[in-house]
Image (cartoon, rainbow, N blue to C red; front, side, top):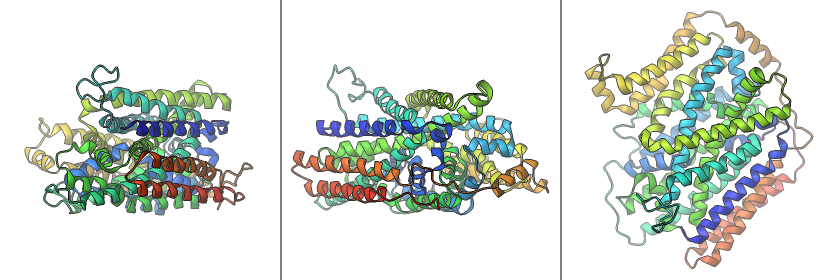
Length: 569
């Protein structure tokens, strides 16, 4: 990266920290820190959910798949939009009507304390690994852009570029800092800003790559079926299973459930999920187009670095730093959401109940910040170990395809039906985990089958979704049919649902306050982009359009922020 790119990236990171510090004062209660006081606008919640599932891992894993195999990567990720729409139809409103502050509170009410223990430690372990992968991915992108001279203290002797470990520590420290300071409000607001900058940055790259393709540059040969929506591994059956896996994930994984809880009403929760789904039906075709176009120009790039190398090829000075900032933004969204939700669980379910039953709200907020710091340190450690664990793509596909379904499916089932209990939760999680281990490691052993082993080896992705989507549904269906009457806990929970009422807006008028932060931040970003005109002779038209677009959105957000706070619905 050029010096101006480094300056742009540094300014963006400082701005992200500033947003977190701005919202630090709102965290007077644990509900403020972990549920935004129930006052998040639905559009903020929806954009935050969308960004929670995006990270630099998205661009490393799915961008790498798009570079290698083409349009099938777009088809796979579009399935997530279908899942989110289904969540809006059947699940999101139910979460809000329960009246809980955290998803762990619902799990305890519905299944008991033992279930909270199971979910907390199992999900935290899985999510620390997955967010560690995301942190690793954004660091990989940065080091690809920063070659250093021999003898530089931050140089990796093997690659000649910036040390991967330093990049992981740098990005991890920034995310942990603003999450610890600002709580869920900081997570939500930085997600909104990151969404806008990321989408504009992607839209900026696509036409520049098209122009490069049309400039007469020699085109690289493409693999067979590069423009097909399916492949030998990623069939239509896999797509159906992927929709099922993500229905469980988006509907019940605690970082997403928190987004349905933190809004004022059940209608807002549904709208949040619909916005998330609608964006995921459209956006994959946009943010996976650059690596597909780049494959036509260069056939021998590292797939994990294809996205950022495509950006480097066409972006003017300063814009590469902004693209790197956008990649960091997406990763920060995924990481900060997970840190916040598990810090909330540890604070509410363990610190308050086990260690300090009479803790004040001030003590709970302080404990939440310490837990966030410890979780952040753990995921930094995992990020450093990703190469040893087999690389980003293998970890993401295995975790998503095989582990999330067995863990998440019982929560959704228990949200909609009273006929399963803790035994069904244990069976789904336990048998799903054992089945996953058997499929991955046991088929060649004494309990294995040569025929089945050969089939799994030929169809690894189908095997993942069979374990992750089909098996938990079968287990829960059997448990449901074996019991004819609802569980006692279900009746108590239904009483809460019957007493549900939307949260009225508070005296601070936070309905439109987020728009003010969006306006100020985007206005500053737009002015910074226009300032880059002084550093470029080429690409000035694109810079002008990009900067003016951000200023236009900032102006609209400012007008929204000037309105009087409206009703909850």
